[in-house]
Image 1 (cartoon, rainbow, N blue to C red):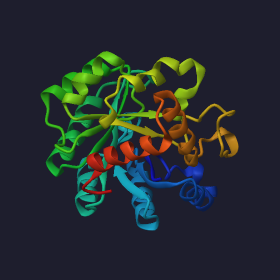
Image 2: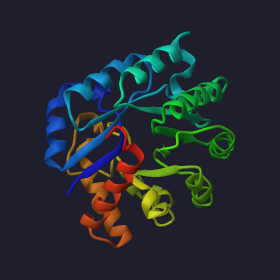
Image 3: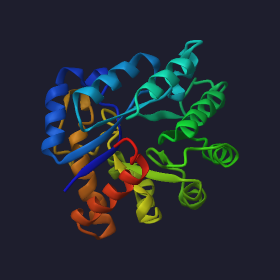
Image 4: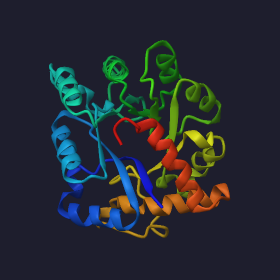
Amino acid sequence: MNLYDAHNHLQDVRLAPWLTDVHDACVQAGISGMVVNGTHEDDWSRVLDLGRLYPEVIPSLGLHPWWVPQRSPRWLESLGKLVRDTPRCALGEIGLDRWKPDLPYDGQEDVFLAQLQLAAELNRPVSIHCLKAWGRLLELLENHDSPACGFLLHSYAGGEALIDPLARLGGYFSLPGAYLREQKDRAWALIHAIPPDRLLLETDAPDQALPSARARYSLPDRLNHPANLAVVYAAAAETLKVSVEALAGQLAQNIHRLFGGII
């Protein structure tokens, strides 16, 4: 049984002291692939290094909206060169964020659209972050080209009504283990509305930790261990009333369809 983490941040410096042990635990837990997402210019090289070091790592590079204010004048040129020079590389994490306090929205759409255009030109899958900007995200996706292979809506929380229009545009929907928390019941329940051929699961490690009572693997400072993906799969199978094996088979097909050119 092969498990796939559709979105994490294995390059995060908070994981560095335990990186080898974390990776080995992921392999032992049955994780065959993980999409490791860069968020800013200073971590792109670490993502690519992990892709060379570990065959399970699918590198993905992008400028996250939280880092838009700190971007360099040549950020897009640098990103484009790295992605073009790395055929086995996705785009992301990119997106829109109107939730984070004190984060200016100015510039976010331009940065998002520039990266979306790059993904479309190269036909690379792209992982999208969205908080409190779902209507605007849909509008932008409806009016601009996106990659023919599709795009991932990471930690999807846009509600049931947007699933169909986003899916028709090429969207896949990934849910994290953090949605197993009681206060996230409504977000986890979206699993019933997502078309089976568009569903993916993720950890977003080292962030978005599972409820501690459910976690099989732990790290200091309450960091999320990516090997807990196995718990997310088991919970999703229970919610959907299918076997873990059947779910894993479906999600393997889904991630290969989306990331097929680079997985």
